[in-house]
Length: 445
Image 1 (cartoon, one colour):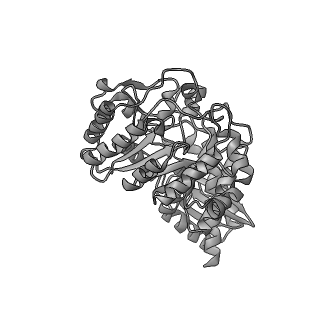
Image 2 (image 1 turned 120 degrees about the vertical axis):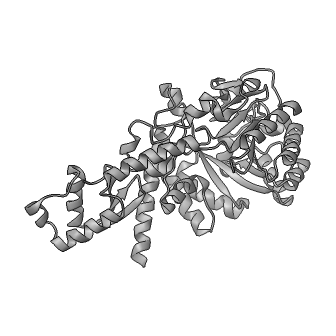
Image 3 (image 1 turned 90 degrees about the vertical axis):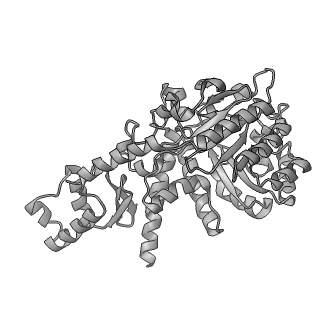
């Protein structure tokens, strides 16, 4: 019997990839072998006698069966054991990441912000205090103990530099308490002055600077509360960070305004803007997403990956698929929100996913969660994986997908155990590209 995880994917030019979505293995086929294997996949077994003889000789069939055996296409019992083993690994996933929400406000009003309901609603702005920072870091230290995970803290908001003093204290205090800790600051850049740039460089803080393209693109969505574009301020921040020798990469959100020219804009980022690293965000939720957005975004990311590869650079969002594919490693999940992170708010609440700051769902008073490792929410959300999502087991991208983001599915269906439709398209398009790319490399050998 042939594995239920076997998928035939037409690569064009008479070549078909027989792809094992569980074991992440590939056998490339051409006619008449493709027709024979198609029958095997449809019937879940090898065609008998005359039906088989019409297609291939016994010798060719034997060669095929050896290849299928080696690549786990003929081992349904092993498949069941593999799935059980992977589900067991979900239970063991440690918490390795902490978000500090330095403030619940922002000085901008970006049109597509998924936290706009929180950030742009009039309220008394909160900033994370030193006491809260200390409590958060101390809890994180306990959680990391014995996990083997390197400490990583993401300084987030709102705009975290609205609370500049808090950012400085958090970096200094965590550096004392957590040897080897690394930091990432996610910022819109408009509040990066010389003092900030020098401080971030001194402590080795990596900066994710939000830039969506050249001025005419960036200023359509990334605007002040008065509707004024912010490109000039962001470009100045980028230069200040480079002058201070801080580690800075660009974070570009893919929208309908830039998706059709994304690869050209990447070339502009690298050669005109002076960026050394660029990564991309896909829109979350449903209110900003047009019908053709998922396909356009997926194909644009592939073009950017090809361009970046030629420059010796990586695109993180693509690498999250490329690495499991290349290593034959099943991707359990694609998001730290699947039970692997802490999110601490300025008003001393703790949660599992920063997207839910809007609604306040899945957040608890910090004093009530003494150990997230044993908390029912973290343990339940560890199960959020393609391994447990309805329909995912039958998908060709099953092993390289990770399931994407669960915020959008939750908002639409009221459960985290649904597929992320935008990410689904990205995973499938990326898989087809990687298989075709692998075949091209084999042809060159």
